[in-house]
Image: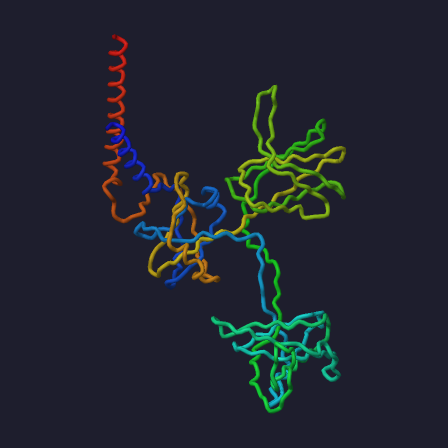
Length: 431
């Protein structure tokens, strides 16, 4: 019976704690919601420094203290981007009863061995002949015979067809897509029969897909201060680096001065102070190489130390001198749907908070790629952290009076049980 009562009281206390979060910082959003829709809220590094590692302790609230669902996104260090680049179409003639004659210009005379056709959706198989020219007058064979497949789509009005040919670098390419006769795939034979006429395919554009890597966007982090000391007997330089807050760092650049040519191993480490006899102990975070022919710039997936040390192995060389440190973090956003006429703010920094679960996470693909950005105004520390309740109505187990009564009852019950157990132990010892 006692166990059931204790379990019920503990459940009530835990349920009450789970329903409310106590945030220590607040920041208003600029009043620029000009229309209902999705917006990007860019989180400054100063805000991220107050958050948990996974950014789970941040919320968007309106003037009624109601939570607004959002999706948290971070820039990737590098991501691939694909663009379709068109070749100028010099001519596109449909000759009745014959063929489609298409000529394109290979601007820059790049060496190519394939071209992508964007066609209006259809179910057709054609025969194609490819020729090349540098002046548009004299033409040379590139591929005498090629089957031009047009695989139709069930879901799109446009389809892609790739034509492959030997690697060449002509300025112009001509494609004769035969519309006379028919193609027998089983016999691999094409009949040019003037009495048999097929409608041409509709070529919308011609070009190629270019895929390349792009770098993500970064936000500058306030520069740290540093103190440098070289111990000649150890042939090592110690540099203490201190940030104003516990910023998340994704990129660091060190600016060293020293010999014209240098190549040194450095270790980033945290310091554990020991007793005089034992001395200080340095716990390595990572080892890097700096040299005189690079930017000495390094990327980190996750680096978050308010204070760390740089240990430089000098060997028998002249010590390096650190002139400056630049730091950045990958830009982080909150993507959210806001309504015109409402006031919004951020509430954040609660070590006990867990990440919210919103339905919006199931509709990420519906959020436009390009969104207007809302600025976050200056942050204010909350002297008495406000309690943010997830639901508008407060259940009986969320009531503050009930919580305190439950705590008092739990203490009283435990005290009574302890007193009773002591009494029983005395009786047993007396026997």
